[in-house]
Length: 130
Image 1 (cartoon, rainbow, N blue to C red):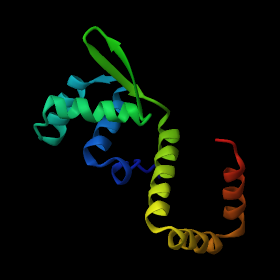
Image 2 (image 1 turned 30 degrees about the vertical axis):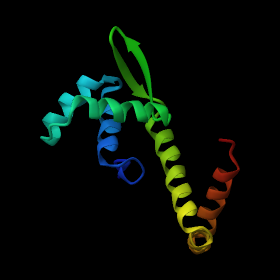
Image 3 (image 1 turned 135 degrees about the vertical axis):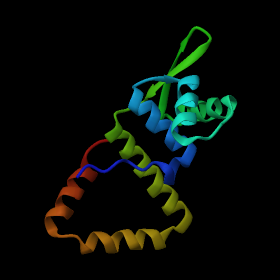
């Protein structure tokens, strides 16, 4: 079963919807995303709101952009699997920053509860260069 990545926890609902739209299209302008969100969500976001969120996603390395004429066209900065990995890392960082050693203790408990084969695979993943 393929699971749809959930970006809301790290990015927030609007930014997550924008990322999903850009991923689905491959590339999109602010106007493209705005029109799609109006169609799919029925919400009338301001053009400047979408523009600001997309610019921030670019600054965070989630989207890349290229100027075409008077507008930017945005693309995913990485394949979706890599994006999920990046955002997962950001989510873990936030939890550890907020809860410190208590969060790390719970991560350790969860790891200890895993079967040996899963622990071995996770250790191998952790040893891979980023």
